[in-house]
Length: 287
Image (cartoon, rainbow, N blue to C red; front, side, top):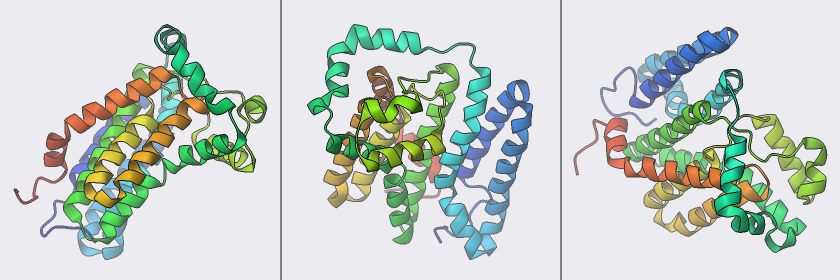
């Protein structure tokens, strides 16, 4: 259990989650009132576990690790809201930007090594590893009792994803995704790639989440923060982030412009790191 003496009933990450839910709720009232029930239930869960945590070790562990679940759950909550509130998609502008600035890079990227099956399988595994690598970093920090580092990592990663979710409302785009009926034929790969495509459809569906690339922003942030926390992991984390970013365009989930946008978001969040650390862990000892 990672809890400093005398914790506040609501942690900074709790407040971040509630602020996001309030904002999402204000959108839902206008475009999808029925989603308010889900948003309200999520807010209640956040508050209940925060209140139970000080006196119940099991609740404290759930509360500590809740950002991992919240990142995925809130993404699912945002999907129908973005879809209902988007006046029009910006895919045309993203494609035009790709053609103007990244046409050669994009073409070479999508046809890397003439798309051998092993590379498609590797890219597919890398794409879904995005969900597990930051979870492994968080769980390891938690298991080692590194409370301050855990809080900072969880807060910054959560803030990064929430920022990308908000931007999806401003810049709704489907991306260059292929229809499921032709994915296997066009993208290639083996059994591994086919399984990953089914997994992604089940988890993500076809949301308007192309710009900025959350995979790019998130992988860059967790690679940097994870390397600081675990220097010996740095080569593996950097390589995994590179492969995740490679997979986004190679597997036709994102435009190159989306990747550039995700990298810009990651740079902004990492640039705000001192401020985010202070928000995440205001009781930390001054070094």
